[in-house]
Every structure is written in structure tokens, then in C-alpha cells.
Length: 81
Image 1 (cartoon, rainbow, N blue to C red):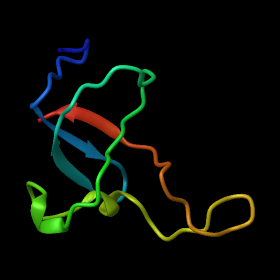
Image 2 (image 1 turned 45 degrees about the vertical axis):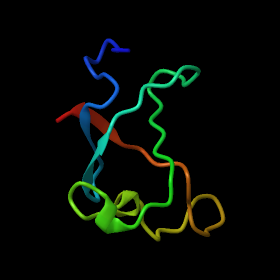
Image 3 (image 1 turned 90 degrees about the vertical axis):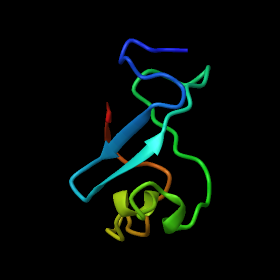
Image 4 (image 1 turned 180 degrees about the horizontal axis):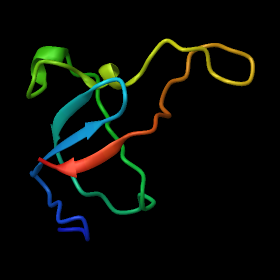
């Protein structure tokens, strides 16, 4: 399946933000809202294409409004590699 972005299952995509970027293989799934990227799995860094895992996109910054770690919610950009 191919989306308007031109990304299809199996394509290599680059996901990033101000912290870093990584490359993953795309898997297009139904039921995901437009603008939402889901990166599932607990893979070791060396299992990723560039040797860095998804956690390079998250920081240890305190989350609003009361602090603590922010997981599973991060602003990223996505493009076909």
C-alpha cells in the first residue's frame, strides 16, 4: 500500500527531530490517524540500520506540567530516504 507521501511498505524512511534522526523500514497500517508515526518494538541499537535506536529521538527533559519523563509522545518529522 502506498500513501500520499509516496511511502510504501518496506521503504526505508528517515524519522527525526532536533535531537537526532534514524532510519527504519516502513510498515503502512490502517487505523492510524494522519500525521501520526508509530515506532513499535524493543530492538537493540545494533538491530537498526544505522546502529542507533528509537530512543535517540527522546530526551530526559522534565515533561509539563509537573516534571517527570515523557515517553511515547514525541514530535518528529518523517520522509522517504
